[in-house]
Length: 359
Ligand code: SAH
Ligand code: SF4
Image 1: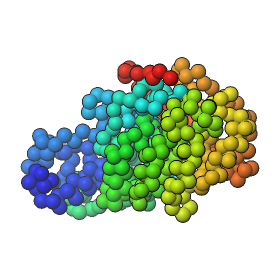
Image 2 (image 1 turned 180 degrees about the vertical axis):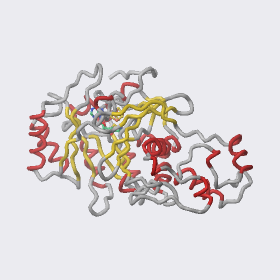
Image 3 (image 1 turned 135 degrees about the vertical axis):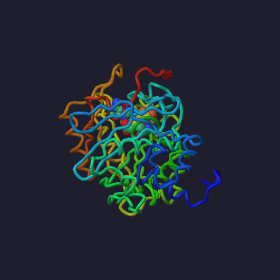
Image 4 (image 1 turned 90 degrees about the horizontal axis):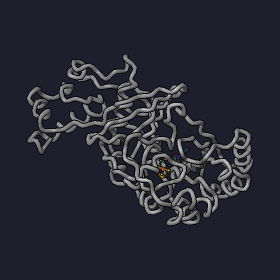
């Protein structure tokens, strides 16, 4: 606003319009003068990502495809629960890390998302799913000085609590600065006001990024994609393990400063015959016992040409019991949206260039 020669305090009006009201076009900004709106229209590109495709799944979740300004596309998933909603977000177009079981990894890295593109996925999904009576305030209400009520978990006009997980496309810690800028905006009290503890960043295990995240007093929660319990197996399916191996990871998680009651989520993709043995279960329990952790078992979501399969239900149940018998908090992530290819690891855009990595 100051760069446009406007008073500084108008920034607050912008913020309120963009994030509290979740307006997506300048002509909606009834809190600004007509002439300023006209100027913004010509001088400032309000290029939020737009939803170009939505596929509802039988379980109530919806996979959305977002178009970005440069024509690239990323995906996100809206998962409603009784008392809250969880949004799965992308942090990059593609991913550099080339995990063998992951469809996004097969694309290679195309580019980082900007902070606005990260926040924009949240705005677009919340607007898309807003119930008619929960729509943002009408312009005349806003002009009268009404403030849209924030739900108990933040996020603006009468949305229930919102959880965000960076488990879509990309490695969030490879896009650290934009991720943290987006985190600042998402948690801003004057905007979406999502509490930091409701935001989880999932990493494949970049120790430098984990250490850096630990230096922030206000930060998202951490999830680690462990996915294997020996260096040999992990290096085969996650090339990043050749840089930071299991011991390096355990030490990084051990020194990560946790708040009281906070736990690190250990995600563990179950690949039939590869990562699902009883010995894997025992080593997984031992790994998770080295710091406050909870384990999330994720039966593999099949995608074309992956060469992996999910274990049988009985095997999943046995591993789950083994962990809980070892006093490790454990849950099984039932793949939401599997029937629309929206579950984790299947977020790959068809028709985009693929750069398969040599392994
Ligand atoms: N790059 C980050 C976050 C995105 S991947 C990371 O790797 O953690 C989010 C989660 O999806 C990770 O735990 C990953 O192991 C898991 N995942 C990837 N492909 C999968 C698949 N085909 N089936 C089940 N989970 C998968
Ligand atoms: Fe990248 Fe995560 Fe997929 Fe690995 S699992 S390729 S780190 S998105």
